[in-house]
Length: 69
Figure 1 (cartoon, rainbow, N blue to C red):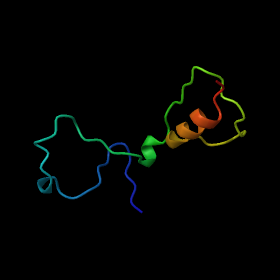
Figure 2 (cartoon, rainbow, N blue to C red; figure 1 turned 45 degrees about the horizontal axis):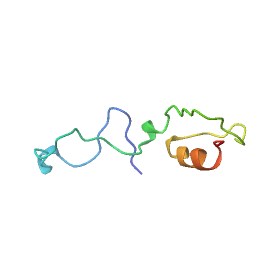
Figure 3 (tube, one colour; figure 1 turned 30 degrees about the vertical axis):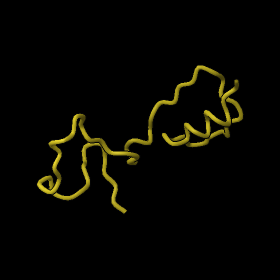
Figure 4 (tube, rainbow, N blue to C red; figure 1 turned 45 degrees about the vertical axis):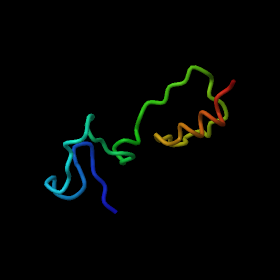
């Protein structure tokens, strides 16, 4: 397993990638350094397990199963 931090890019040499057609900057998806994010809700969140470690992808479970209507 290879993991980069917030200042590390993983991949091959830049000369092997033609980025001239991009209209927006590239970004990584789902790295360990991106897992700690604030989760904000405008409704009460119910039935959370005490001490549960919440990460960025937990937003789907929280929004669908734990937010009151």
